[in-house]
Length: 338
Image (tube, rainbow, N blue to C red; front, side, top):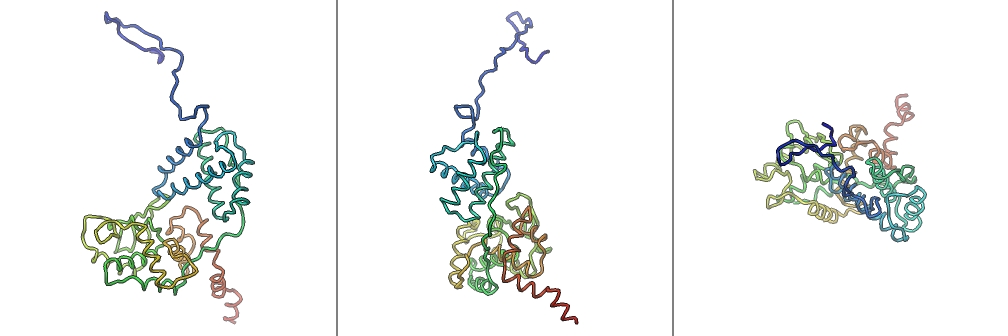
């Protein structure tokens, strides 16, 4: 039976055929009144897709913030943001150049905005929402990357000396600091850890889920193992499976830890570097490399999908480069053997 034939029975139960109406009825579209995708609709589609790709709300918020910034800059110039009919020249003049000349944004901020716009238009093009990708040839700006500052060994020791280990909250904070400095975990990854992810026998955190949504097993040293054993004892058996909890047995919040860490930094007299969870991550990466770790295992531990961020960690420490060169200098070592 042809697919364009709709069968039915008449009153005498005789089978008849009826052809469907040839005109296709109007189907509700995701497009604006002029038949093209509006800016807000496009952003909504992109962010929905992002939410299915990542377990990190912060990643989605990051993309949303950059797109909102783009929209605001266009409106400041009297341009209604759109997704069709754009050219790369418009993006260069009214987006990139505007950030450089008018907004005076830092290089890192500019490049983050550019990367989001490239991902945004690439998504719309690949999904068939726009005919061409205006950002395909848009390049990120080159220049001196900002130095990623990290804690010195003295500052790390000063920070670890601040929590009051005679209290539950103080020892919990100490344990979190110890773990983050030995694994480079993001704060969000630490806060979502469950007790059953801690393998004390093998010294691994099992199935840590980061931005890439690719679970990874992260090792920790025996010193951290001893601290974790003590913490689990003082934590006790509670219904909540989350590893790090409050006095009420509820999961720790990011804001609470960030504010506490900032207070510890002030008490330790740390200056010249931002006292934040991400600085702990940078510090781990720096010390890992300087203590003989290789960048490939560092990439796996940190949960990066490429070596790009690892290269930043490795390449920007000028004073440490000098120390490493002194250790590994071919001529210096030849003269020692001579």
